[in-house]
Length: 271
Ligand SMILES: [Zn+2]
Image (cartoon, rainbow, N blue to C red; front, side):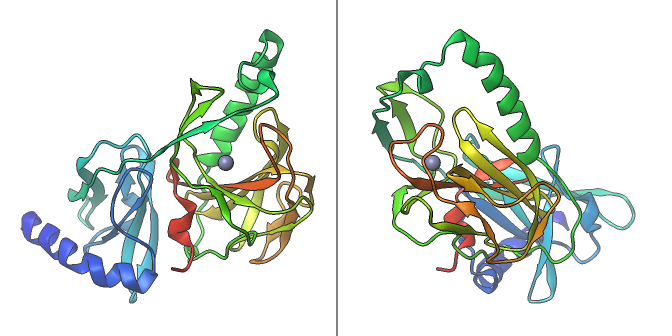
């Protein structure tokens, strides 16, 4: 019985994906879109220990799952309870994806090899940012189709394996869009400002909560025009493009987190 529902799930993939206009090929740094069985309790859906975003496609409930860059290719499972409280495991296949290397030269060496006195600040800020990125708030009708927050060429895609001054660092967790300093940054979808700050690596930053574990992040801003707790509509200005923090030039670093997984923002833009 379970096997049959899994097969049906896979057969439904293509049609639901196109209804959402998201690229639903499950890869590390990507997303998986899973139709839910009719008798499932959406609020019980978990991927690992994390709650999962549930929305609708063609009026049927679907789970949209963020897959961390460190995901291992192979079989992954969405766990969900049916109305009787029995846990169902819905399997899906995560394919491999290799991301390219990027080598960057940073003139401010302290931004590559921070000094002892910087470490306390970096650790504190890292905790603060991680906490915002894994934030969960319940909200119906989460919008998963975004407007691009700034128009401009991609200066660095998501997922690149990075080397700063030839030293390996964490992979690129967002999308860089090049734009002149002072260009307004617009909210890609409705949300609530979760947090703002001036961070060592990310510079002036805004974190936006769109609901159900979908959080977006805007970095290196010259100016912040919003305050935590403020609600924003699609297109509302969050601040301006700048070059604060660890940068080589003015750009927006745009990050998207879903169920605490950093994923490729391009997946949420119209094709
Ligand atoms: Zn970036």
